Image (cartoon, rainbow over all chains, first blue to last red; front, side, top):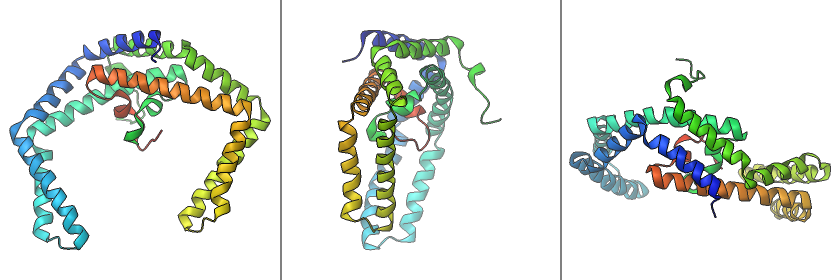
Length: 122
Length: 132
């Protein structure tokens, strides 16, 4: 069970983070990215093709045309203004989060994020 | 820009101070103090340190043998035997237990923050290629 003092300190830290411009901008860009119909459609097509691609790779029946299509789709997603904005806001958020992690880790003497990250993400 | 250059000046000092306060609270918690005490005991116990070193060596050797495809039953068994020996050592047993408790508490804390932020703080800032 979570230590009450730790929980309160985490809550206060999160409150400051959530009130920052970087977090607000990131959350807005994330919502836009998740709900943009054009990006969603591109992403669905990409996922479907990637699955087919994997199956065909196993049998060695992938054509150059299919490789090109999947690359084009990936590029369309990556260069879409909504994706670009999301990536940009994520980068800006990362800067303040890294600074915060550094501030925590300097005090505790170990890397907070490396220790606290979920195991599944390794 | 120098990649080692601190970006601290651009981040709102109030947020960084809240992070420091959070770090200090972790440092004052019982779970952290228990870990520090167990770590201190390990530093002062040569036998325990030797056992830990031998275990790490047996693991490295197993990994090396496995990467060459030549691991024998003995190579697989040795780290397991060493692990059992380590867990019979009071200092090491207490150290691992304290470490597990601290890590579990920090992971839970990060999950708590993730639920409130809508993104995973630790996952986004952990060192590249770093694994727990």
